[in-house]
Image 1 (cartoon, each protein chain N blue to C red):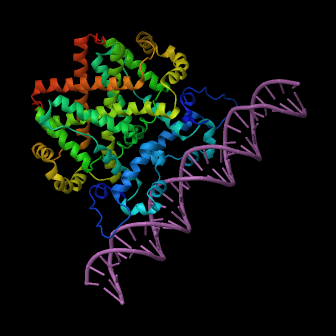
Image 2 (image 1 turned 45 degrees about the horizontal axis):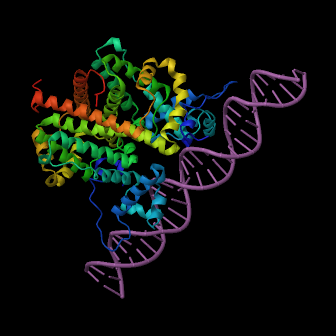
Image 3 (image 1 turned 135 degrees about the vertical axis):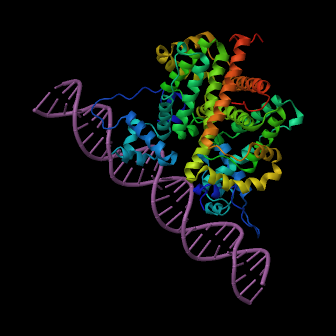
Length: 250
Length: 250
DNA sequence: AGTAGGCTCGAACACTGTGCGAGTGGCTTT
DNA sequence: AAAGCCACTCGCACAGTGTTCGAGCCTACT
């Protein structure tokens, strides 16, 4: 039973295994251990054999609880989505609620950067993904959205978090991998930029005017994310006041 | 010479190999063939051995032109970014230009979905990525942005394309993998949703009201992307008129 | 007491990325 | 013309991968 056989074979749609006896392994345990390995060493650090030994079990024992590695990763992704908190509609203004959700999504992805590379592989419809959807629908319904625009709005909010986190993860991983400080990296890249300068006049002009990269990238990256989020929420808000949440008559 | 050694060891920063004689392989050729394999069969379809035989060469010959597989993938990613067209500032209103850029990014990513999983690994600073940055700076400068907000705006635009493409790629890949039609998949998922219904009252209410999923997902996905893009551009535009492009005094 | 079946696991298969060292052919230098 | 350099190709080998298969154990029910 391979999870790639189709939606019907997807982890989520398949009934769970009947359980009796005192098994020494459990799916939750396996997923948790996998996440620890992934967090600590990235995607390359997770192999079924290493995961097995880490759990004091044979590598192939895992295959009783999990169809294959792909499916294990799907489970792990959903687990990460479970870390995202979405406020109740009544608790805050919807803008604040949306910010909190997006912030939560972003930081969950940055806490577990290996998820980012997996998001494009399968649509995530695990229980935690569903719960996240449910609560976003609640939030945006209360805000006044309905129908397709509601769905668009929630999807766009997530897209912003995912897209931002992707870029952030890229530079963070480079910094971590090289072990260099931001200043050292900037020094390394400088000559390359100088060489390409003739081809990039506008970029160079901007770079000169904005001054040398001073702030540490973590801060800049967060600022970029926050700026984009505000713009997006502004855009959603004016759409809301203009359309009152209903799809245009078109 | 491993590319993971740091920025200094990155493909882009390292001087190209001196070339003489009549080599039968070239870096461009290798990258192109790799992209064909990736497009046709996804990330799993690319192995150094298969790539070698496809080029009529030994697998290890590739290592003369490319430090390792990681670096080959970096080159391929930049190549994909080369497919994105960004209009000249004078040619259109900046909103149109920004839309065209984002559309181009989105479709490039959807044409080569394997890129999506790679974007979070290394910051892409290949020549094509640089050119893309250059032209976005030109576009947004002409629109009236300056300083950090300019950089934030371009980054956010890309983030929207990337985040949207990620979700789109996820469902497209599932459809392709299963070979099922959208209706069949919906039927498969239905009982699962019913089972979870008690936990997702708001989502269920929305689902009932919006009606059964009728349109094909490609269209819905594109609509979602377009809706989000409009909202984002609205948000950028009102920021621009309010702040005149300059960072707040703060 | 006997049997079913949930669960573990070792051996094996086909495959992966990559280091190493030997080999080959054309260019430059003597 | 001879010699040598060196860009380039490639076969072998190593350590590791995901996954299948079949044998076995141990518990729980008949």
